[in-house]
Amino acid sequence: MDRATRRTSSPLIKAGMIIFGVGLVAIFVIMILFATGRRDLPWWLNVLAAGAVGVGFALGLVAVFVEARRSRSAASANR
Image (cartoon, rainbow, N blue to C red; front, side):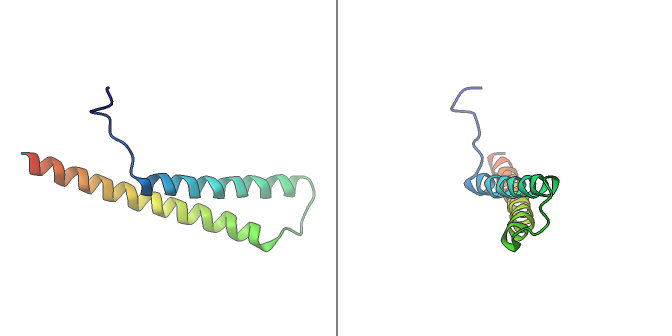
């Protein structure tokens, strides 16, 4: 596939992936801290883990649906 025909993902999808990744890193940090015996974790770490994963997943999902809809409407316009 050459550069002219290769599709690029939208910035919204990339932002969703980055936010989701930050949430996953926060979850791994929580798991490591629990494994080392820490029980009094900061509240912002828990909020970051739950919030970033949820928001990143939702943002990515919406972006994929918007991109698919845009692609489908462009394909039907070309017919």
